[in-house]
Amino acid sequence: MCEDLGVDKECFDTFWKEKEEERYLGKIDFEGSILYAGNKLGKEIDSDTLAYVLNRRIDAKATCFEHIDLKVLHMLDAIKILGLRTAIVSNCSSEEVKVIRESELYRYNELQDARNAEMNAIQAKWFTNRLPQKRETIGDFPVAEEPLEILAHL
Figure 1 (tube, helix red, strand yellow):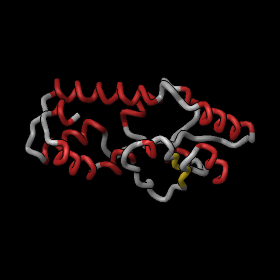
Figure 2 (cartoon, helix red, strand yellow):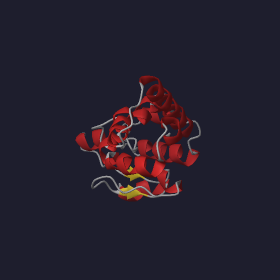
Figure 3 (cartoon, rainbow, N blue to C red):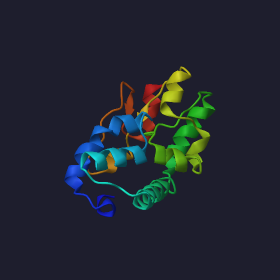
Figure 4 (cartoon, one colour):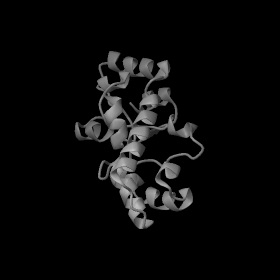
């Protein structure tokens, strides 16, 4: 992304991280975060470049949902069989929202919506834990490091 924008990654990441929690909470979208970081760096980002970066990000996120671990689907089905309502636990960024609707996970809901519906909302971290840097826990949501840990929070 930084290469496409023509900015230094280390400098960009500083401002990108400032908006991380707001992205996860839906207060700012991916595009707004790019423009924010670009503005902080004094870099004007033209609409064509912004659209290109956004489309690449959406394509990358769509790839994440193409190969869902069957253990995750089995766990979600087991919870439904128990008669419990379920919700998707994701980082809720705008680009995931666009692509998740096309995935098998869409038949389940979202983290904050689950809490609003008085459900037991649990943050799943097994996807992000595969990354070189682990993500922080969002808010005060309980965490599951592996799919079956969800059952321990029920």
